[in-house]
Amino acid sequence: MSDFKDQVTPGLGSSPVASGSATGTAASASDTEAPPTRPPADAGPDAGQPTPPEQPETGKGVQGDTYTIVTHTNAVEVPITVKDSKGALVAGLTYRDFQVYENNQRQQIQYFTVDPFPLSVAYVIDQSVTSDVMAKVNSSLGAIQGSLTPYDEVAVFSYNNGPSPISQGFTGAQTSHLTAVLATAQVAKGREEVVPTLGGALYGCAITSNGGCVDPNLQVGRSAGAAEANPYKENHTLNDAILLAAKELARRPQGHRRIIYVISDGKESGSKATTKEVIKFLQTNNIAVYATLVGDSARWGEGYLSRFHIPFQMNDNVLFKYTQATGGSLDSERNLNGIEKSYQHIAEEARNRYTAVYYSHLPAIDEKFRKIEVRVDRPAKEVEVTAKEGYYPTARALQ
Image 1 (tube, rainbow, N blue to C red):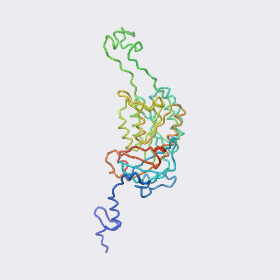
Image 2: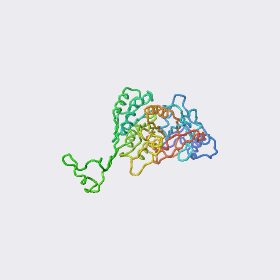
Image 3: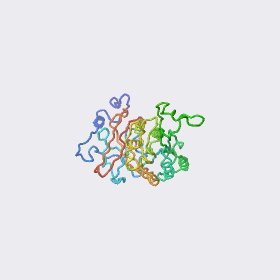
Image 4: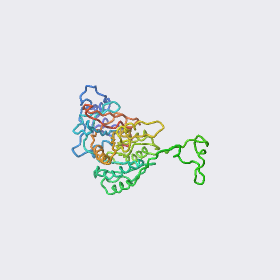
């Protein structure tokens, strides 16, 4: 009779490898292996990557292997965009060209693919822009479907004085339902520009009698007192709109790349959520923000200056913060043709990214932000690398 005493561990059951065997010893050693660290500056591209990552067959994509990796381990998926000095996508790179760091420690790439992803896109349309800009945006919306494939899914949101969904959930990108939804979005008129008048002959009368203006000396700011009128306040609830779209995207199943596409002038005023809070939600749920900047913020020079916040004034452009933090990109377009082309350009960029997956060396969940840095084995002047700045771990990835 066989002796099972040394082959059964209480609570673990039987094991085909006896305790103390060579295989068992090797497994124990690998469990205690120290995490990888940043290699020296003169190390070659293969330093820190002793074995090649898993790579799917051409066309297989991430529908099989990546889904298993993401749902059963603390794997981190990093979409990466590489552009040349002219802004064109750089193709033909392999895993050997990339180095990925988490909190300054080199990570071994376990999975790598160049296959395109289907997209789950939440379009967020700013309807608080001026009427002339709104007319251009409305005319461009018909080009959205031309930038998508039948494998993509889309939801549409808008915001003015508060966010609201235009579509009821997500729908196929090439369906007649989406065509009707976009037609519904085109009825928005935008706002008329208002020049605030705080006094003088054009201000009007704060105190009237029988429809007529009372003695000017009794009006606000004169002998009646030194009070000042409040200027007109604009509401551009961009933060709340992105958060609403992100909550819907977070419920979408694995296998699609989650994208928020904003068409806006970037102004933010009156939202309940802060930009920092919304970015944290996006980084927790692996959502990237792309945007087409329209209006005055899209003008050369002014678009850059609008990023700086003047105290006690609204934020003139916060979109660059969203795209930078989540690994997206930002196009600035002022004319109709440019806006339409940006839909195609950005959708192509979001779909055709390099995808690297690694196992984090940190605990599965610790609620701390983890910084990601991606390097490419090319001269810095020749390429521009775009990836998310980092992420917050979530239990959703372990389900």
